[in-house]
Amino acid sequence: MISFYPGPSRVYDEIPKYVKDAFALGIMSINHRSDDFVKMSEQTIKLLKQKLNIPKNYTVFFTSSATECWEIIAQSIVTDKSYHLYNGSFGQKWFDYTKRIRPFAEPLPFNVNEKLDAKKLIFDLKEGIICITQNETSNGTQVTNATIRAIKKNNPSYLVAIDATSSMAGIDLDFKAADIWLASVQKCFGLPAGLGIMVCSPQTIERVKTVNEKNHYNSLPFMIEMMDKWQTPFTPNVLGIYLLMRVLENMDSIKTTHDITLNRYTNWVNFLKQRKTIQHFVTEEGVQSHTVIPVTADENTVSAIKKSAKKEGILLGEGYGTFKPVTFRIANFPALKDKEIKTLMKFLEKY
Ligand SMILES: *Cc1c(COP(=O)(O)O)cnc(C)c1O
Image 1 (cartoon, rainbow, N blue to C red):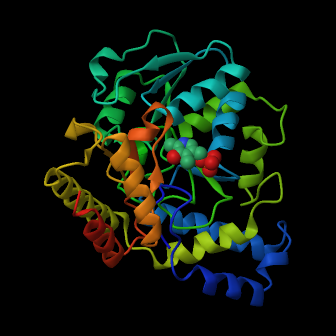
Image 2: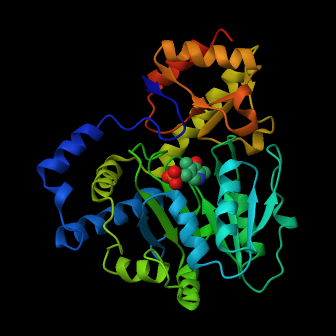
Image 3: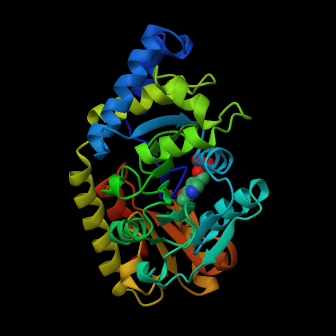
């Protein structure tokens, strides 16, 4: 089965070999306070910064998922108000979880085909946090680096937090344009689920130290203290970190990956333009995600496509929410191979 599900998604072919290596090397039972772990953790973070072009003065944390990162931010950074710009299910969930912890969370929903206008997004508190889902996996839209940069520039005292779960390691993100970046590894990293990554700017670390919230095992002041020694407050997913390190060792620079992703995205857009019964779900090209391709058709066509795809050994991503019956999604993640994409295009050609 070829999985085009946008998460959990196709993992790299090398993963079974790396797992075997991990077992042979004793990684699966190493102590998370040992020198061996510390070396591996440091090396993984060094590679992550190098391959993804993350500024040296940013701090990387290991968590268990992107969802956990949402909660960490709500607990340890938000003190009062947080603004949530979203147009889909993941952004809304982030808002919902935050609101349960911090009741003054404010939703700022926008439309699927709407491009955010940074000029209109100037906030008036002394400081706060603006939460943006860079790549909305549920509907295949994205917010560009330029927009994120402009929002931060217009609101310099605010922290800008970015959910890049389904784009980090797939496209070239401008890390210095925002303060907090979060992701999990089962999407563009081509790894099995169970590891989250959070990247924080120096301004974020300063804010965390001022707020100094210490009520949870994963309160950021504890995480900072432990990460000073390349460790985590809890026993982390050591195998996941090892697999991440191995995948990063073999990873192209993000510029190269970005070009491949963009090229494949363009091919998908052109391919869909030529179809009669299926179309790209997002009509405004400027907001289309580069890593998740949402496709729309009438209900009968969508259910027929899903069914026959399965028979052909192709797993498509389900649509989301109200659009579920009339959409399906195609992951455009780096671990997918050209010949697998060709197979899917050939299958979809008749629609
Ligand atoms: C998948 C996804 C999440 C949730 O990731 P978990 O690892 O399940 O916590 C959050 N945000 C976005 C945009 C996603 O695509």
